[in-house]
Image (tube, rainbow, N blue to C red; front, side):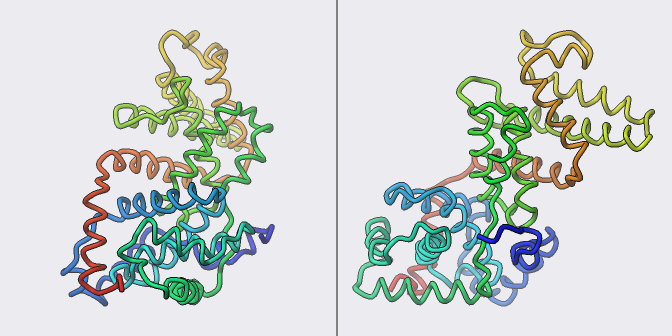
Length: 341
């Protein structure tokens, strides 16, 4: 993998604004308006959840490492910014993207093994001796639509490299790793650089972990989590403003940030009423340390705020995901258009 993200094709060609991404998708749907009207699909987030689950199923069977699973999901996102989903068989695209990602991430799988696994999961879509050729053809299709831009920089490296510097415990890293895994079910890989995603995942791991199990909260805690994360980012902005000489504004922001972070802690673990005493709590101290680190960096705080909001929104959306409905709607247009043959 190329070491320099800043000179990569990912940064130059595959980062978009939300408006640009929406316009690209709207154009694809407008070009196939009748097809879109004939075959309604679940919201994009639910499709991404479905794709993620199918990739993980194959990955678990074949022991494929997470980096390749993540790259495959990025390939699918890039491909579907160029091609309307109803013109393809998503199961063919899933298998092919994973096959290609394994080659690029230096953990290759034989194409016949991939075809056999696909036949196990989707016998209706992979049922002939031409499956290997079909995957090969689809591979060239993906490469062409992605303009041969196949190197993907992921947030995992940033996360592991900052563990010591930020004083993260292994459980913090594990939860942040899970958040990074989850972000591939959103549009964030097409919107922000991997280091911003990694830092957002660290922030969420620090403010949302409320029990030893390390589980992310559901809807009940999501609003408080968003408030706490935003407060931590406000603290970073406040510290940066203070360094720039904006002292009076900083005071209010610092108080607001501490109050928001304090609200996320269990009552019995909150110490004192001021920031100096509150930092005696180990988790609070980590958040303050992280906020101080952010303020000394040139990280785009507004981008982190947006990433935080998107991830919290995604977790709420995930609770409404219906696998049966999503699968049926995909199979409906695949069969109706003869894309399973």
